[in-house]
Amino acid sequence: MHISEGVLSAPVLISGAAMAAAGVGIGMKKLDYDRIPQVAVLSSAFFVASLVHVPIGPSSVHLILNGLLGLLLGWTAFPAILIALFLQAVLFQFGGITTLGVNTVTMAFPAVFCFLVFRAGVMSERSSVSLFFSFLCGAASVLLAGILVAIALMSTGKSFSAAGKLIVVAHLPVMAIEGVITMLCVRFLKKVKPEVLEVGHAKKSA
Amino acid sequence: MRRKVLERGVFTRSRLFLIMGLVLFFLLSSSFPAEAHRVYIYAWAEGNTVYTESYFSGGVKVKNGLVQVFDLDGKKILEGHTNSKGEFSFQVPGKTDLRIVVNASMGHRGEYVLKADELGGVAASETGKEQAETVTKTGSQESQQGGVDQLRKVIEETLDSRLRPIARSMAKLQEEKGPGLTEIVGGIGYIFGIMGLLLYFRSRKK
Image 1 (cartoon, rainbow over the protein chains, first blue to last red):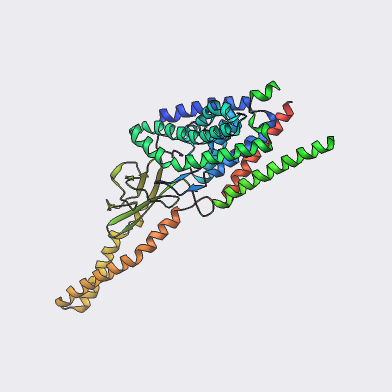
Image 2 (spheres, each protein chain N blue to C red):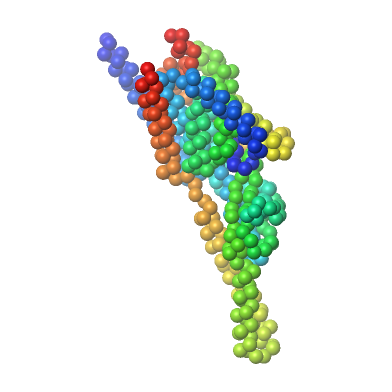
């Protein structure tokens, strides 16, 4: 899912960087003092998740965990993912420095999007409903990230349908795994520390 | 009563950290044999042919990936596609440094620089010829020359096939540097360092 250096054209890189900067700006504004450790822990989780290779499927893929980050962090997923991606680029040579903006957007935007869409469902009192939406959140954010990567790659002259199909098919097992991981995390956190799930406005009103 | 509540709070928090630590540990330990998301290409010359092999860092071969060969000024010399084993070979275009770039699917890109002096094939066979000539001169009879030529050819072929795996594994060793424990732990350390900085500056502001 990391786009390498030298693949994309300058306009795509620049617009990606601008969008990432905007997202990170919003995220930093929403970052509460009390939540900084949580952001760091999830940023670390994202950082190492890319090392967990999923051997199923036609191509080489790894875990992303952006759905989980979105659900637990909301907009602060942007800075968390930016930092993790930067370190992955520097230490692992995944992706690259010039593609940092594009990669941040392709992974963090789905995280925030799924957070906004599925949050209400995840917070439901009925545990079956909550688990169902958690699974959807984990799976959909991977799917959406794949679609965004395909859009970014369109600028290289590849047709959207070809690139998109390949990415989505390759990530089907990852989608399933991340759905389950998100589900288990939500169930666990609801039991042990439910206030973690109340991101943003819920806390401010209190 | 109050103490009880406090204890409970401490208990759940430490338990949460324990679980998060365990998750991180699990991610770390499971990542050792499996590497991650990067494309490698390595190349070696043999006679007048340059062989290349491309694979994802999980070991999956790059099938039908576009391989482009440039000189160091960025001029494209030739291109082609890898076969189902991730291999692609081409004739040595001349005594020049080659930059071999593979474009795999999903925005992955890898490159390998093959130095001109590694393209030993042409030069080596010339010196071989000279040696053979000196040998034939001592032999002085024409009928022997054919035999020596043949012998030289057989020796060369045998050497080539014997040395091929060595050249291959040397190229692979040069190129393959998956993330090690130092990088992983270092990255997590950086993230927590950033967390500390943020906490420090925000606490001064308050």
